[in-house]
Image 1 (tube, rainbow, N blue to C red):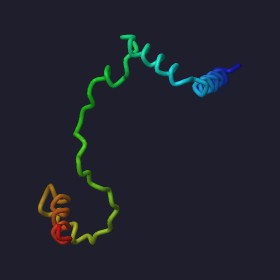
Image 2: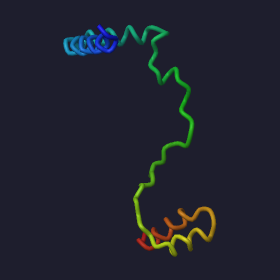
Image 3: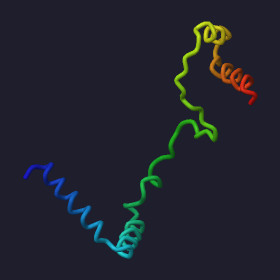
Image 4: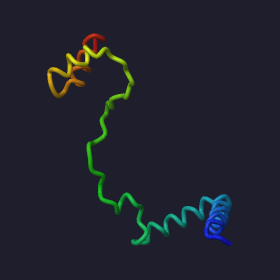
Length: 95
Protein backbone atom coordinates (compact mmCIF):
# COMPACT_ATOMS: atom_id res chain seq x y z
CA UNK A 1 0.00 0.00 0.00
CA UNK A 2 1.41 3.40 -0.95
CA UNK A 3 2.01 6.21 1.53
CA UNK A 4 -0.84 8.24 0.01
CA UNK A 5 -3.22 5.28 0.29
CA UNK A 6 -2.22 4.79 3.94
CA UNK A 7 -2.85 8.47 4.67
CA UNK A 8 -6.24 8.41 2.96
CA UNK A 9 -7.20 5.24 4.84
CA UNK A 10 -6.12 6.79 8.16
CA UNK A 11 -8.04 9.97 7.33
CA UNK A 12 -11.19 8.00 6.49
CA UNK A 13 -10.96 6.03 9.74
CA UNK A 14 -10.36 9.21 11.79
CA UNK A 15 -13.36 10.97 10.24
CA UNK A 16 -15.53 7.91 10.85
CA UNK A 17 -14.49 7.79 14.51
CA UNK A 18 -15.28 11.50 14.91
CA UNK A 19 -18.84 10.86 13.76
CA UNK A 20 -19.23 8.14 16.40
CA UNK A 21 -17.72 10.22 19.24
CA UNK A 22 -20.09 11.49 21.94
CA UNK A 23 -19.92 14.98 23.41
CA UNK A 24 -18.70 13.49 26.71
CA UNK A 25 -15.84 11.66 24.98
CA UNK A 26 -14.89 14.83 23.12
CA UNK A 27 -14.90 16.86 26.36
CA UNK A 28 -12.75 14.24 28.11
CA UNK A 29 -10.20 14.21 25.27
CA UNK A 30 -10.05 18.02 25.19
CA UNK A 31 -9.58 18.19 28.99
CA UNK A 32 -6.78 15.61 28.84
CA UNK A 33 -5.04 17.48 26.00
CA UNK A 34 -5.26 20.81 27.84
CA UNK A 35 -3.85 19.21 30.99
CA UNK A 36 -0.76 18.06 29.05
CA UNK A 37 1.86 20.87 29.13
CA UNK A 38 3.33 19.58 25.85
CA UNK A 39 -0.01 19.76 24.03
CA UNK A 40 -1.16 23.33 24.54
CA UNK A 41 -3.21 25.17 21.91
CA UNK A 42 -1.05 26.87 19.29
CA UNK A 43 -2.04 30.50 19.95
CA UNK A 44 -0.70 30.21 23.50
CA UNK A 45 2.73 28.96 22.45
CA UNK A 46 3.28 30.98 19.28
CA UNK A 47 4.69 34.49 19.53
CA UNK A 48 2.15 37.28 19.09
CA UNK A 49 1.52 38.35 15.53
CA UNK A 50 3.39 41.38 14.38
CA UNK A 51 2.29 44.11 12.06
CA UNK A 52 -0.32 46.76 11.80
CA UNK A 53 -3.39 46.27 14.02
CA UNK A 54 -6.71 45.65 12.30
CA UNK A 55 -8.60 48.83 11.47
CA UNK A 56 -12.12 49.36 12.80
CA UNK A 57 -13.04 50.88 9.43
CA UNK A 58 -10.96 49.06 6.82
CA UNK A 59 -10.69 50.55 3.36
CA UNK A 60 -12.32 48.74 0.46
CA UNK A 61 -10.49 47.77 -2.68
CA UNK A 62 -12.54 49.17 -5.55
CA UNK A 63 -11.21 48.99 -9.09
CA UNK A 64 -11.99 52.47 -10.37
CA UNK A 65 -11.14 54.15 -13.65
CA UNK A 66 -10.23 57.81 -13.21
CA UNK A 67 -9.06 60.26 -15.84
CA UNK A 68 -5.27 60.51 -16.02
CA UNK A 69 -5.22 64.28 -15.58
CA UNK A 70 -7.17 63.97 -12.29
CA UNK A 71 -4.72 61.38 -10.94
CA UNK A 72 -1.76 63.46 -12.16
CA UNK A 73 -3.08 66.51 -10.28
CA UNK A 74 -3.30 64.59 -6.99
CA UNK A 75 0.10 62.89 -7.53
CA UNK A 76 1.73 66.25 -8.29
CA UNK A 77 1.22 67.31 -4.67
CA UNK A 78 3.48 64.45 -3.54
CA UNK A 79 3.08 61.46 -1.22
CA UNK A 80 -0.33 60.97 0.34
CA UNK A 81 -2.19 61.61 -2.90
CA UNK A 82 -4.53 58.66 -2.35
CA UNK A 83 -5.56 59.98 1.07
CA UNK A 84 -6.10 63.44 -0.41
CA UNK A 85 -8.19 61.94 -3.19
CA UNK A 86 -10.22 60.05 -0.58
CA UNK A 87 -10.82 63.29 1.34
CA UNK A 88 -11.91 65.07 -1.85
CA UNK A 89 -14.35 62.25 -2.59
CA UNK A 90 -15.70 62.38 0.98
CA UNK A 91 -16.20 66.14 0.66
CA UNK A 92 -17.94 65.75 -2.72
CA UNK A 93 -20.19 63.04 -1.25
CA UNK A 94 -21.06 65.26 1.70
CA UNK A 95 -19.45 62.99 4.29
